[in-house]
Length: 205
Image (tube, rainbow, N blue to C red; front, side, top):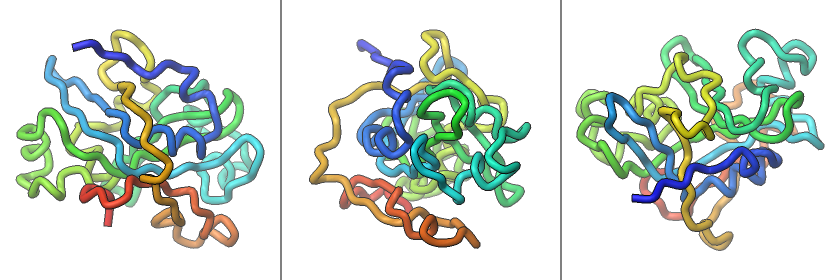
């Protein structure tokens, strides 16, 4: 099988552009030589080089300057930005845009493709439809945690990457407000920067 990992140039665009373009691509995680993968079916964009976003870690914390937690988000595109939330969940993001500006895309949901039995074990026997239909769920299923923070997703010898696939037609993509933003003020709370493949059963609920 020919594997075409997405190059850094794919990610070196605004978060919103990359968030839509990632739909239909395949996220791959290799553990002990075995591939676990899923089709990306839902994303969220955070920050943009041309527009502030108070829902974004890189904007709302430290007056828009990097912190120890967010430094990766300000780095070069095509790297993994992984953070811990609610004291129990890991969240997997892809750094986008240009180095020096906080841009990232949260991967919210996958359609499982490879290594499903292992995913079920990691998800404590959850049903197939519940394996990866949320950002914390997919991180658990693919064993994504802090050890992968800053990983180069474009490295030829990496253990996590995104593979190319045909673009999802615009007519098949829906948009709406992002989820779980808490006390984020308007207009950022309602910005339609969440993207998903219409009618896909693995989109988060």
